[in-house]
Length: 480
Image (cartoon, rainbow, N blue to C red; front, side, top):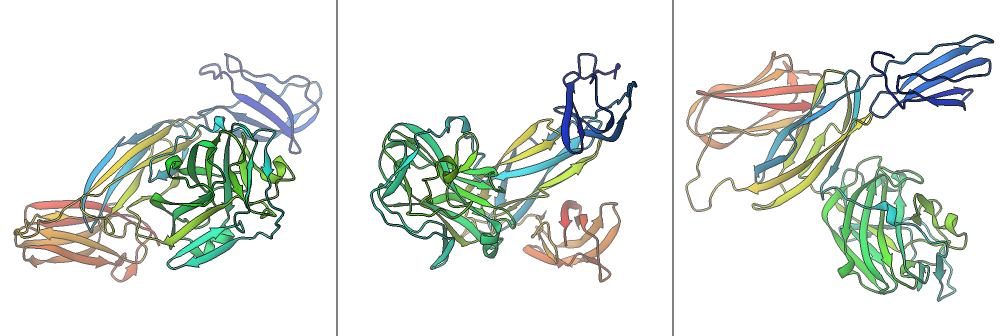
C-alpha cells in the first residue's frame, strides 16, 4: 500500500500447484506481473518478519488488469525475564514464569527449545565432505546389519553396527566431517518417557585427528537431523582402536515421538579414522554424513555400504530438574502467554549448580529470545542446630499435573490457615484448608483438580495461602 509500503516482498503466482510467476515489491510497495496467461491462480505474499498471506482463485482474463492487494501484519515479541537465577531447596520443587508478549498487529506462533547443557554453537560451514571420501578396507568380512537394543544390566545399548571390522572412512588427507546414526520413533517407542540417553560410545580407528565432538540431535526426520541439543569436545578422551565410552554431562530425556540422531564431528589430518562395520548399511538409518546437507554414505559413494560404529546408551530416566510447559503455541496480537519453568531438586544434592538455555523461536521470524537459566540447590536446615521455621508457600508438584498435585507450605507460628484454589477469573473453586494449625515445616495437601467432586477444565489455577497477616499466591496448570 502507499501509506506504509514494504519493499522486497516476494509475490508468487501458482497454477495447478506449479510455480508460474514471481515478482518482488519496489520501494513504493508495488509489484507487477505482466503478460500472465489466462486462468486462475493462487497468489502468495511472503516477507521476513510478516505473516504469510495467500489468496486463491485469482482470475486473469484477456486484455484486463487484475489488482491483488495485500496488507501484511507483523507481530512483535517481548520476553521477560531475560535471565533466570533461582535457589531451590533440596528435595523440593518450585515454579517461575516466562511471559511472552505479542505487541504487534498480527498473530505469532512460537516454539521453545530447552538446552540443558547450554545451546550448542556449531559452525556447520566447516563440514564439507571431500569427493575423495573412501573406505580403507583391511578385511574381506561381510555381515548383515539391523537395529539392536541390548540390555546391559540397567542400561540398553542401541546401535545398527555389527562390530568394528578394521575398516575406516576418510580421504587419506585432511578433511572435516560430521556423521550420525538415525534412531527413529518406531525403534525408540519402548523407551520414551521412561529412559534417558546417558552415554554415547564411538569407535575411532586411527589417531589422525585434531578434534572429535560428540553430538546429539532431536526431532528430525529422513534427511534432516532436527535440532542439535548436545555438543561436547571429547578429543582428549578418545581411545584408538577401541570403544570410547563417554557419559553425557546431563541425561537427555527421550521425548515421545521424536527421532534422535547420535554422532560426532571430526577434524581429520590423514588416513581413514572414522570406524565402520562390515555392512551392509541399515537402510536410511545406519550411516548419515553432513556435507552442506545430510546424505547417506551410499548416496555419496555407492561403495560405502557400511554403518558407523556408534552406540547410544539408555538408562532408566530420572526426574528432570527443569521442565518447560507449554513448548509451543500461538499468541494473538496484543495478547500474552505465561510459560511455566518448573524446577525439581528431588534427585539433586545440596550445593549442586545446574545451567540451561531456554530458546524461544518466533514464526514469522521476528527474532529469537535466549534465556540463560541457573539453579542452585540450597539447604533447608542445618544439621545439629534447631530448625528455623518460616511461613512460606512452596511450588506444587507436579506442575503441570493431570490427576492430582501436592501443595506444600510451612508455618513459623501457630495461626489460622486458609488454603484456597481459584480459577483464572478469580472465582473460588475449592477451599482445601480452613482451620487453626500449629507451627511446622512440612505441611502438605493433595488436590485432585476438582470442585465439589466434579473435575475442572484444563487451564491455569491459583492457590492462595492466608496465614495470620501473611498471604501467598502461586500459579499451577491443570492438563489432563
